[in-house]
Image 1 (tube, one colour):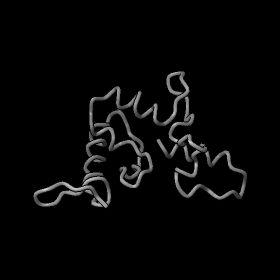
Image 2 (cartoon, helix red, strand yellow; image 1 turned 60 degrees about the vertical axis):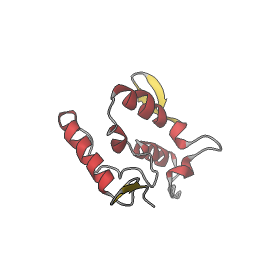
Image 3 (cartoon, one colour; image 1 turned 120 degrees about the vertical axis):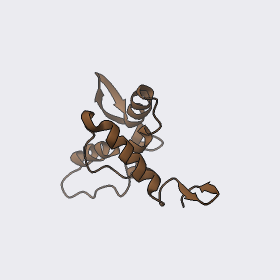
Image 4 (cartoon, helix red, strand yellow; image 1 turned 45 degrees about the horizontal axis):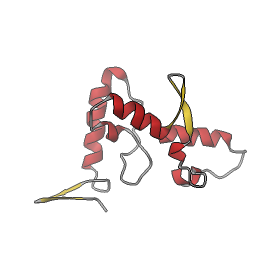
Length: 119
C-alpha cells in the first residue's frame, strides 16, 4: 500500500527532483502521508489508513492481515516481491506472516522464557 503512495508521489515530481528518503517525507504538516488520498476503491476516495483499517482489517478477522500490509515502519513486514493473487492468497499470507515473525530485526523476537520487542 505504501508503495502505491510513493509511486503516485514520484510521478508528480518534476524531472530531476530527489525522491523522498522515507515515507514521512511525504507528510504535509500534521497530516500523515497515510491519511492523504491514495486512490478510489469501490467508488470512494480513500487514504491508505482507510484502506487498511476500514476495508482490509474490517473484512477479515485475521491477525495475519497486518503481516501483508506495509506502512513503511521499521518494524513492519518487508514489502512482498509479488502481488497477492486470489487463488494463492492464504498461502501468500501465511508465508508473509512467517517471514515477518522470523525476522529478528522486526517487531518480535523470541527468547528462551520470554518474548521481547525487536530493537
